[in-house]
Length: 342
Image 1 (cartoon, rainbow, N blue to C red):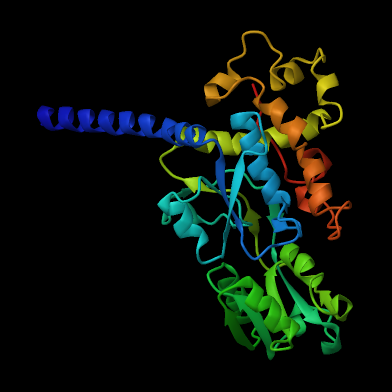
Image 2 (cartoon, rainbow, N blue to C red):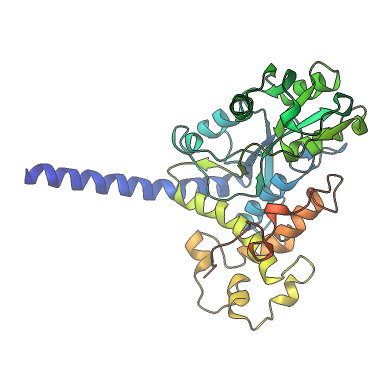
């Protein structure tokens, strides 16, 4: 019995040592190749990940990738983007083709456990909604019984849709497509009455339709869709870096630190701000992450705080003009909240 216990203890120690070794592997690999390989929305989702005519990427998820690169390299441009469909995104992360998935992906228990991924941060709190043609004359999703609904396969959207209509004793005709652009085209061509996906996505898709003003976003939100980045399990250091990149952007907004004033704020006497910007003597926060102490400063200087990223990509400074809502700071009745950086 004692021998068995000893063997089990040795086995556990070996596993712990293996995990410790693996935790540094991804950061070492990323540094060796000189860039972060980031999986993003391949169809192009305005506000989250899209390319302009020159091939330049922008969006809330793109800023996340840049923030990780700024933390690791001190250079937010050291990112390569892998465009992925909803179907291809998970195999790409599982295989190691990408280092980080930042593709408006909902954090669910099955993805967290069955797929072997780790989620921690939410860079956009969303919920599934509906877009309908105004000519239908409906003002609520509860009036959609009998409607044909366009949806993308390989997402949480199908199940949410089925649950909502069943719970409300309504019928519907399902029209499924594999790629987002196929759903967009089918809805625009009138092959279905209603389009359902994350509400933020509907705002973006509406602007791409041939006659945007002929369509409306219905008020109902039928699900919780916490969107955020994912990494593979078994790599704690990389998981921490990816997570704290987001928390740094949120903390910067809480502190009132922006791209414009970050250099000035380095002279602050506030202990929390001094520590955050790498000005506290003896601090090991950066070293503990495997980074230097300027990691958070580099994120804010090159990418901005969370509020700045939100406003230019999906908020008042963008074509989408989405209100902060749940994505406001916790001090302003929202859910964005950073653990202490100390």
